[in-house]
Length: 201
Image 1 (cartoon, rainbow, N blue to C red):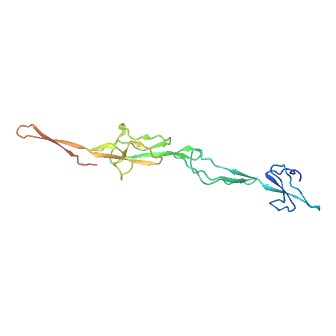
Image 2 (image 1 turned 120 degrees about the horizontal axis):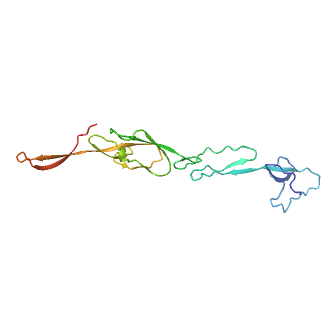
Image 3 (image 1 turned 90 degrees about the vertical axis):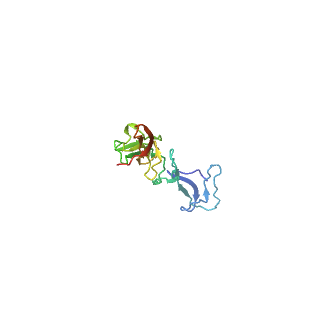
């Protein structure tokens, strides 16, 4: 058999067949081009070039993220709709742009504490929450720090480590008052005792 005829952009020549619609030619063209097929008929015939359209594999790389889509197949001349599956990467949007998170403070009845919100661009490093200059004040209470929830107010944390919008709650302990008793006869102190202050808001 002869070498492949004219090239056909976007298609691969498979061989020859007497049926123009055949997909598995009777006279395949060898991939190594070393052993051409033979026509053994003893009559005249018409052979059709059999072609298959080219396809290409499109793979996705999450570029440091996870859950990349499965590879897709691109057919020559046909647009490929890209996968709707979005990879994820902690602290980033796809392509990758660092997320911005909002840190807010609830002074929980206190005053003079931080107000407004803090926009933090994710960089993987914890953000200190305790700034003594901006600690809230609350009468008859001592500020202990910032808690991540009202339900678990004893879990005070000095750092913001969550890649999410988060409100921190001021956590306090009741202040103590030192009472001193003295002898009515001599005026000398007899004993000291400590009680918790009566909470006020």
